[in-house]
Length: 215
Image (cartoon, rainbow, N blue to C red; front, side, top):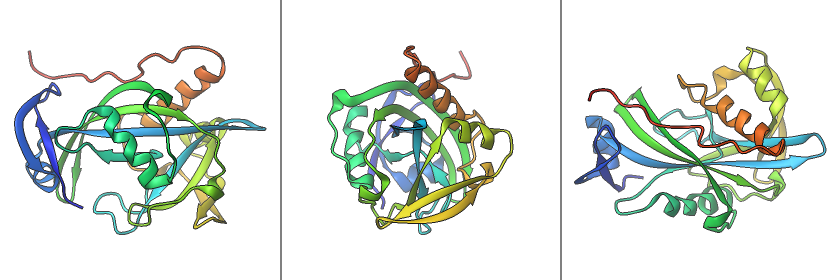
């Protein structure tokens, strides 16, 4: 779905221009997105929830991605993005439940052009069973949970057996790093390390900090 978003410069500062999301992708205009990683804890320790992007998505259809993601509409602040959590997973949360992990800056070529985004990255601790999540079918095909040791196995090129959930029903699957949305900064694994530190009682800090070219 197309929507109006704020255009940014390469430093993440608003330019004052408001554009359609499709135009931003076509012209390679910097813009802001909301990312939230949902982290649960079970008998085997902490796990991350990932979503499989719906097959109808225009970018990276069918690939595994951050638990919740969405573009920030024109005039919205980073925490306004929390609406995406309820829309995509059916979880109602308050702003104070979100832990900021920093801002991630990415540039990726996509079929529509060039995607230039600043990701406002947050973490949410919530152990709601996957069977109880209400998925937004237009955005999310399925969800799964990955323990930190499974994330590490994927990082080292292994294939992992998992259980995906769709419409409250489980089905077995096998995944590898190739099934994830591609990235050049070890995004998923940096988040997993932050989660590990949190459950060890340490502060993860802001693990993402945008870097800029030019003066």
